[in-house]
Length: 160
Image (cartoon, rainbow, N blue to C red; front, side, top):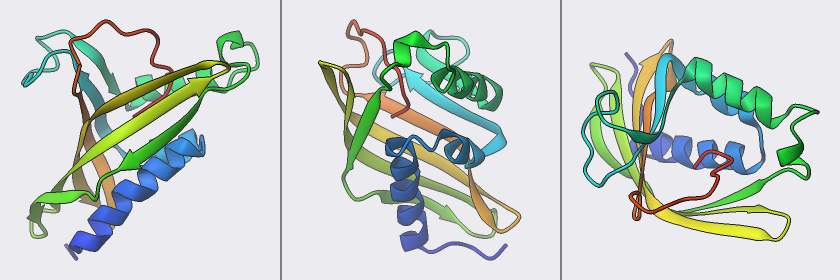
């Protein structure tokens, strides 16, 4: 294992958000390990994605299906397309294990999602559990904890 520097881990998080804001969803999905998950807990401090209800808990297959829906010509709810903007605080490296090829990075964020005349603002923290696969970083788990995760939400169209 070659290991990654703190700056490379931080850049990974910034680059991931940039892919989402540019709607480069296929490239974003490629950042996920085959066993990767995207998780948005429903309650503060939630510890189990499988035994407790979540806002989202999707594996790579389900993420791919959502991405196909977002770009479908007959997806009228995405015409015009929803746009997003991530404003990230500098990510903090929480765990760095180059020997084991495992890393964790936590980032506070503000996220705006807009379509036509509707604009939604979300705030929270994203935690990336990253692993080294073939010399590259892959997302094993992206956990998005919203400040108001237990509030009633409308449709969240994209990925935070």
